[in-house]
Image (tube, rainbow, N blue to C red):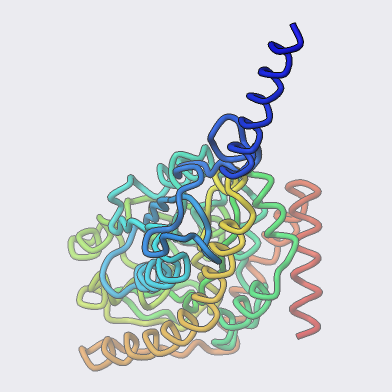
Length: 367
């Protein structure tokens, strides 16, 4: 009996030594809490066989946008791909799907919300149906109407606000807020006074706030798919577009609508959003690398790119025959007065909207 017990103890000791040499995990896998979702547990990053200093496992991030070409959404995700794949030693692979290859904007947003798509770069206005408080960015005349609204909004958002935490509760992890363009009205007719908009059909993004602002000006909002806007302008189904100049330029809209009306001079924000559910499954070092990289890409690459691209796009449209119409102080005052009720209406939506509105109003005042 003693010999049997001695043999069992010896075998147990040998097994313990072997397991210790292998990492001390009897199951042979990654220790609990460290299994990478979507990756291979315990696998060193490609290009770094030892795994020293590099995240372990392999991960795939699919990023979608509704746009193509040189739009800031697309160049931002391309730069992110380059940086994150290099920084991770190849452990993270980014697949890019521009031009709605992963679905329409609403479909992609729902995919991010339920965790079936890892990330998107989409205008903030599309998220209003899922997280109403984000529509604070669509409110006319919240930011200064002097052509600096886009830069003003990006400066505030880049510092971090409670809007980030609010979106996380709805399933959206903010990776960065892209510098957008100023929100103007491109139209087939000049806008000299607010009555010029009466009875006109103007396309804008599917944000109730944007659509209500057009109604306040006396116009009707069109709900066409963005891909149908160019044809609609050509055949007269719509007479204008409330958006930013990079959208007009990439879609060639200025060929049909020659009037660049520099009103209401709000902001148009694009956001870099990851799935919160998916991010929550990642090891902390992977999560940190993704968020740090996305933030850096926006702050030290996209902002400069967008600044130059917006200027180039506007100049190219003017060179092609488009005319910039400066709004009078009277026109801006009338438009601001007409939409003043939207601010209080937004605040009264719920407690979150009220708190976020008050936060932004204070930040703008103190800039």
